[in-house]
Image (cartoon, rainbow, N blue to C red; front, top):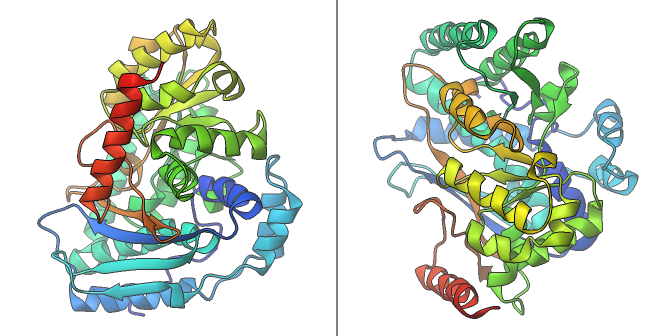
Length: 405
């Protein structure tokens, strides 16, 4: 490797990977998935040297194992069970599950195939590796880091002085961070925000479990789109327009009232609301926004809670789509007093420099040998290799929305 090891702990992933992982282990251990990498930036090119470095970094990641100290930490998260922690004691990443090449417009292809238990855990470290390799090898990293620090200081000061109010917010930037060093600087910086008595904004934690452990913060995260896609569409007997119902049902079986923030936009929020009726709306503590207009979405969720006789002020609206503090401030001021409002802020905290951040993703593209897809509230955020399957999924959704009573 030409760069120091990027991933140094198997805790260096987002918490929702363990939340979903436990439910996968207990309910869907035989499911198999394919994950595919995509770079949405049209002007980004990965060189062969970068691709070789990414391979070496992933090989190094695959040599890691959980330590007993790390397992003890996971065991003390109240909704994680000893049976899953024991599985993780034996678990190791497999380099053989990765296929890495150069046959893409951006110069980099990554695909992972294997059990859902394994491949789900690869997504976040792989994206973090790709990001850091790219920025270290494409630019003067020291200059980027200095620029990052200057912007970080300015953000902190803006919250500290009350220029912006971000309410309750968490750091969600692991997958698209400039580097491990940069993300740690951001998390450490904002962890001191709460020590300032007159600061109205509250930093509650990070999705990065490794950094949450290191800085004694709350690890944050519940579920991702993969959960709804694979649970709802991985069983080929299911009607995919009911993906949310199957996913919510399986989640409640695993966690009851614990760990309950429902993701709404896997197959559009309107279709989600068909299944998010009184039982689930009561059991889940809130909902997460990840696409579409945030104000329109928030109004829709408040109206839905009210239609069910639930006071929306008892529920959390968690916003996590392309946020900065200015947007968070506007959203908070709009909804304050009408619901609990929280924010998960990613790239803006972990990779804000004078160079545009990468817009890269790894998504489930198949489950149990069949295509899966999401149809979010923002066109273009989905990713599926088979447009005919997307058309089929859309027809199922359209039929349900039009004819179901």
